[in-house]
Length: 389
Image (tube, rainbow, N blue to C red; front, side):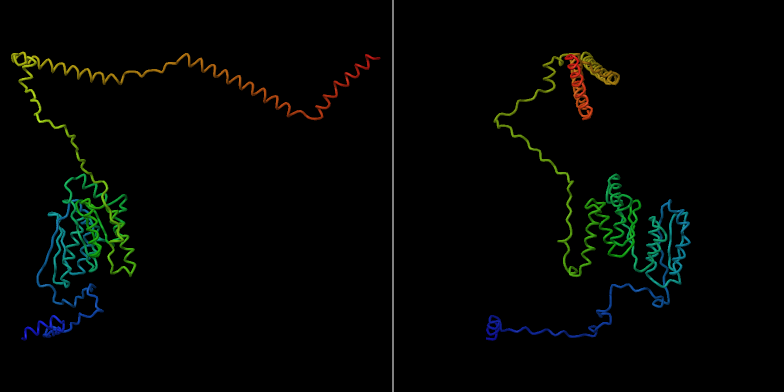
């Protein structure tokens, strides 16, 4: 009966869920660091009073350096030694074995500073300048050495892609440094980067995409610029930015051309059998020749081919000495040209005469024209008078 009542209650939806009460133990107490005002990501500066007794064991790290760095390391070693001495770290430069060693001392208080010192000698061995490498001893600064030599097998391809990362006049590298806030140095088969964790993650992605030919660094720079602009807008802080970011696709991918074979008309009969080498020799009569005659024939064919090749090479050499064909003048064309010149000269003469007549009519003065017209008429009258008299 009780079971039936329970099922009826479940069907009717009258069952009420009882709230589970959690029993507090001795560890379920409010912690002092569970305050929302505390920034858990903030790295506080180390205080020597936290570790007054110092280190119990000696920790040391050593790294090799290339021979071309020997002279520079000798010059800058006093600066490195002074910087490490402030933190109680001993350092040694061994030029015989070509290695640098750092180790803790009794004065060392910060337990993590030995890891920072290890990163310092790594950066120095990878051609990072000493003033820049010493900045790694700060708590806010991190480093990452990206190995790119084993990502590409072909040497020429590797050099070309590494140059894409650097860019013309190191412009691409400078843009990456500004956007990520990291110091980047491309040297040999490695890329050394120094900065924050976020910036180092972005640098590693850009470098690997470039060397593996996934994406050109210029496109990654465009994406980083857009992300920086989107970060300024507080309304988009909790939204997905994929819809705003551009999606670049490769356009130079070689596509395989599908070869289409022409279908021949179907025939139930098999193709005719091809003649063998012996059949061809029997047909030409070479099969019945002796070995000496066969060798003589082969030698004759070889000589003929050689003669053809020599003649061809001689003809090619002599082509350079063959004079070019001179253009021949056609007599008909010259007579036509003369006629054309004569016509042009006559037309120019006519135009000159007409132009002279026009000028003379324009230059005539009215008074002179009237005086000229009156002169001969007076003479005529005087002649008439004389005749009558």
